[in-house]
Amino acid sequence: MASRNSVTGFVLFSFVFAVILSLAGAQSLAPAPAPTSDGTSIDQGIAYLLMVVALVLTYLIHPLDASSSYSFF
Image 1 (cartoon, one colour):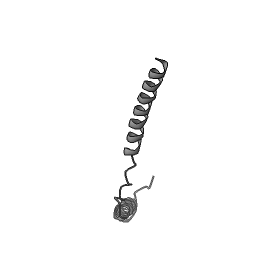
Image 2 (cartoon, helix red, strand yellow; image 1 turned 180 degrees about the vertical axis):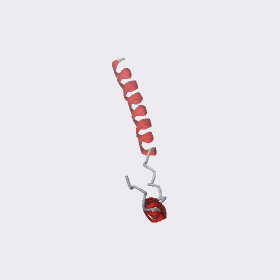
Image 3 (cartoon, one colour; image 1 turned 60 degrees about the horizontal axis):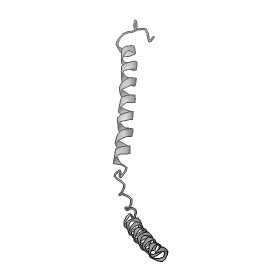
Image 4 (cartoon, one colour; image 1 turned 180 degrees about the horizontal axis):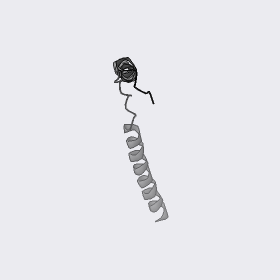
């Protein structure tokens, strides 16, 4: 009986091991996705930043041109 139980245990262990190995092989890593930014979004961000800087400078400098009684701060 001990021989039959050990054979059954070995068969069961081999089956579980084979299933685990087949599942481990099926989980290969997916390739990395292609980059979605081609640099245009960075350029657009820099352009927006420069426009905001120009707008702030315009609002700071314009009152000095309009009237001399304007105090800066």
